Image (cartoon, rainbow, N blue to C red; front, side, top):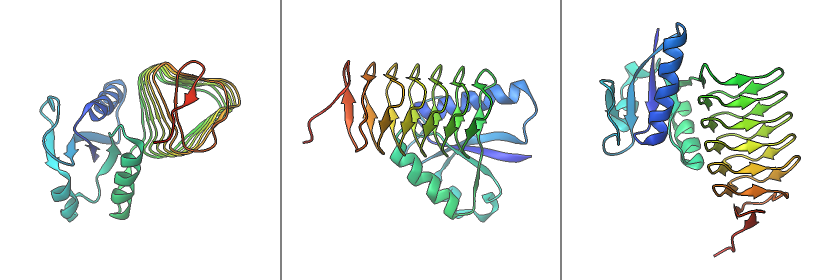
Length: 214
């Protein structure tokens, strides 16, 4: 059985741990959660008796190379950077799917991705590596998410929606059918996206419009 380490020390890491714990409770897993790897400082939560190690020291210890990693960081660009660091050191990644999540037919989920409680992939949905799909979000038919996207709680993506890499969608926002959002696009909480934005943008409001570029 492999050790599973969660990278991070804030809320996202805690939520990832909750998914792993639910999976362990539901059925035997080929891994066991060992603890948290913090980039700096100490966790912002009670680690529940699990180990906490500083990331630099962990990466310097060759005996840990057989461990599995899952990146519990909310910021998409940082999550991608950290995942690439661990990949370059030869680590493999766990894909975590909460027992209450629903994955329909012809869907694929990338390595290192986390689906939290009651997340739904309807059918013919593709999710890239190291994505973070939060509680109760849903993706309708033929959706496509790039690498390291983050969907906040309650996000709703209609059919044929395409997100580029590292998109970050806030709590409760929604996206109408066939909309395309470019890499690194951010959508504010509660926004309603009704048009394509193929470049990088920060979208807010109903209907969502880009914030002015500084």
